[in-house]
Image (tube, rainbow, N blue to C red; front, side, top):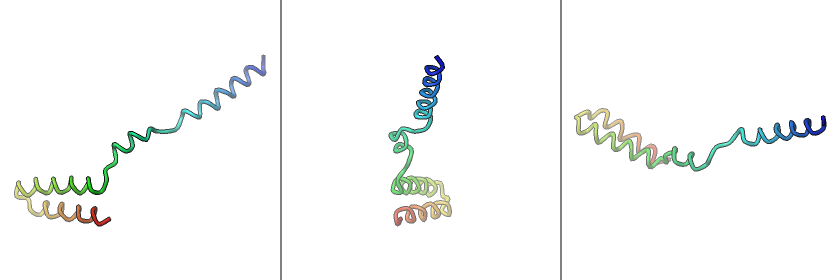
Length: 71
């Protein structure tokens, strides 16, 4: 009886660690953006700042995409 209890408890301890860590790879790819996508987002925001007349903020936003694309 002790052998059965001992073997079952060891079995549960081993299988419990298998499921404890890990992540699905499909979710990770959806969350990350490429440098190109980040650059496009900066340009869109810069265009909005230009329309509002905030040229200094727009110029700062136009500099960031060029750094992202060069990498």
